[in-house]
Amino acid sequence: MVTLISHVVRRSVLLLLILFGAIGLTACSLQPFKVNAAQVSQYVVTTLSDPKTFNPALSQEWPAVSIFTDDFLVDQNGITSDLEPELAEFWTLSDDKLKYIFTLREGLKWSDGQPLTAEDVAFTFNDIYLNEKIPSDVRDGLRIGEKGALPKVQKLSDRQVEFLLPEPFSPFLRTLVGTSILPAHVLRESVTTNDSKGNPQFISVWGTDTNPKKLVVNGPYFIENYTTSQRLVFRRNPHYWRRDNQGNPLPYIERIVWQIIENTDTQLLKFRSAELDALGLGPDDFSLLKREEQRGNFRIYSGGPASGTNFISFNLNRAKNSRNQPLVDPVKSGWFNTLAFRQAVAYAIDRPRMLNNTFRGIGQLQNSPVSVQSPYYLSPKEGLKVYDYNLQKAKELLLGAGFKYNSRGQLLDAEGNRIRFNLITNAENRTRVEMAAQIKQDLSKIGMQVDFTPISFGTLVEKLSVSRNWDCYLLGFTGGVEPNDGSNVWKSTGGLHSFNQGSQAGQPPLIGWQASDWEKEIDRLFIAGAREFDEQKRKEIYAKYQQIVQEQLPAIHLINPLGISAIRNFVQGVQYSSADRRGSLWNIYELKIAEN
Image (cartoon, rainbow, N blue to C red; front, side, top):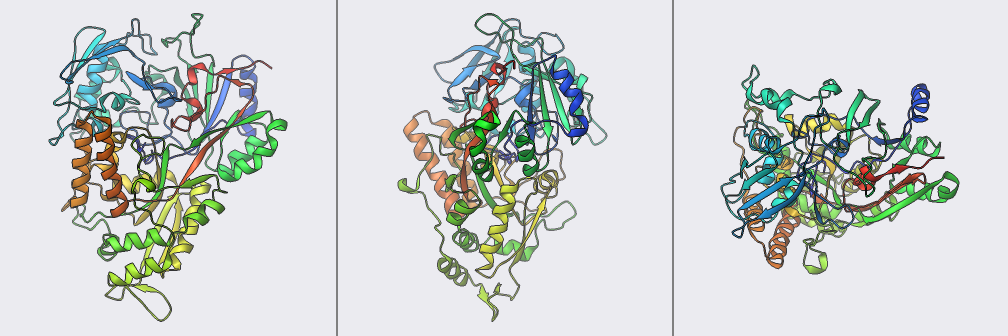
């Protein structure tokens, strides 16, 4: 499941259902690219914000540059979700299910031409992902058993690497999906050298201020150029390992331009003016563009429900920062940590109206942290708790918990404090802004005053992961078929456990942080689910986790939209998938631009 952005997703930051498609360049800079495009094949895609880092081990956002730059030991097919070998040609598992041995493909190279070997794999895991001094979310997904023990990784030969697990761990292979391999010959020194604060220099390398020429990758493309707030340009990696059935090198497209457009309305305008190759569609966009398919020379692809979640979350953190200051106003913290308060909010949000108005009916009500495509998804018919719109029920819960109303219908707590809090979301996403505006209206009907403040995605991420100074946010996580991919979100020690975020590597310690009993129970269930290989028993375990989330409501789930994208007809090889967070780009190496 994901990210903050993101399946619940394992890494993904806060990563966050930002739809992406392709878009042309602004008028002032379009001509040079048009000239170059006449010489090379080019595909232009778009994102809502600048990348926060080029370092895949530290990234907590989605989409990320790794879509284009990174291959993994194991990947999944975007259509079937079946596991497929990628950098690894094959793997074996011992009878006791404790030892995986991966054999790499022969002749793998980095984008600088240096060999990619098992030494790079061992370095990536031992020195980076399993290094407690480096704050990587990958490590959360690799913690095994009650003690959170980590695998042991060793190089057996140039092409073979062994992973020795402390106990059987059923989601291990899917944990490797999306886990980048990094070049030892470039980054080893940054891991072994500390900065002035005693942290590995690796934490600050490959930031977005890095010269792209210093970035060494193994995927179909490398970063050729980055202009802040404008675009990233990716160039075909001449050392990429894939070949088509005729032996031709992949990818087919020479250059990818990832245009940074910080407004979905602007993205739509540029698509309609024929400057774009593709566009991820929101509900309003679909209604408008469906009528223009033939004239606009594009096709609208629909892959069913999107593989992610949309929700609001309250800050349940009772800890203090290193200056002994509460992270959350103690008065508000008392409200947020009252279960009846959260449940009343869930009953007061008119999700059917949100589905009909904001989403134009293009979606479905969402009740679970697990994506609907997952075999582990628990439906309401199977016993999942549902909060149907019910203002009377919401008010009864509040009154029963000691809240009260004044003569003007304003909600007060037992001490007479007006219930007023701030709701934030990323301003770049029009759909989320509309959802939040409705939530403000809905909660006013039960006497709550919601101060809605759209902010930039970068500022929002800083609030969630660094200062932790926030009341309530509306975001989404990307999804996937394996619940354990969301361990960094749902385990109490996870790097994306934003509703009650504990101390993280490289940050000042928190004072008085603790997990609740139900958080600890979710921890136990994730451990049990990872140990279990019987699929029916795994479903029962993850059903209990979904029931706890819906009872305790650390996240109040809203609407699951349909995954839709409009793509120009000259883009060939598209296999659009809503089940894969990469959408139409999961097989980017196979896409072609047809000649006019």
